Image (cartoon, rainbow, N blue to C red; front, side):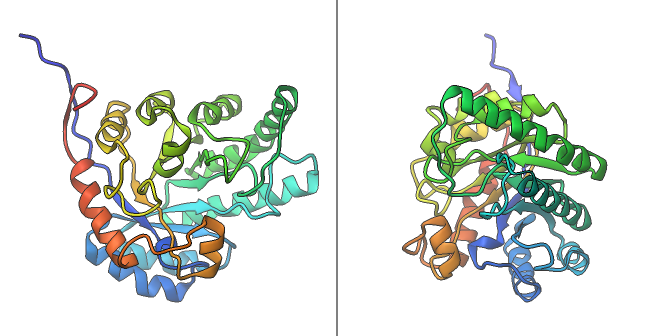
Length: 301
């Protein structure tokens, strides 16, 4: 009797974003959060770069490494950051910001800079097919020199599709892959976020297969943007698809707090998503650790 081939066991480091507790991130926040995150057993701390200089990369690198953690970073696309615009000054400012993010990532040992690195979060506009092609062409052209800088620094950009309420440009992995293919750089890949995928992808596992070989980072949270596993997402199929795609990178919990007014407005978090933010992190880790630390038979359970 023939058996389905076994996909090699892949141990994905599990991380958590500091957005779970605070924004904007500061050195004082890191002094408080790093020991907690390490003590709970996480492997990775995810560091948003809202404004370069908001936290100091050099002592952060020492603090994180001293706690036995790795780091990942994410860019934040504010209204003044846009690579789709025809305004060359705005494009240049955005490229400079992303280069700074890359330099900060390299300084703290992060392999990636993730996020919707194309347009401001919340920007929604109609595009007919011709206008969309022109916009994507501008974006590809603007991303190329940034990806070149990332490659020189040993950092990979991870382009994130968002749901339809946060952008009208890149909602699906297939759309993201059009941009990745257009840029044609190994320093640009795709970020998979389970919250957005649950809304926009007809089959998240199939979307993982679409991105196979180009997956640069993964973010995980529940379908209500709360605790991974306390929801209806098809986690087993998603994890199996990542294993089949040979993705061995971090899986980081990205959720937000309703107790911070800036985060609440930006992420539409109007109620607590767990008993406490600490519980969301700890319970999410308890769910994700065994899920991403096992061999799978074939391509599904």
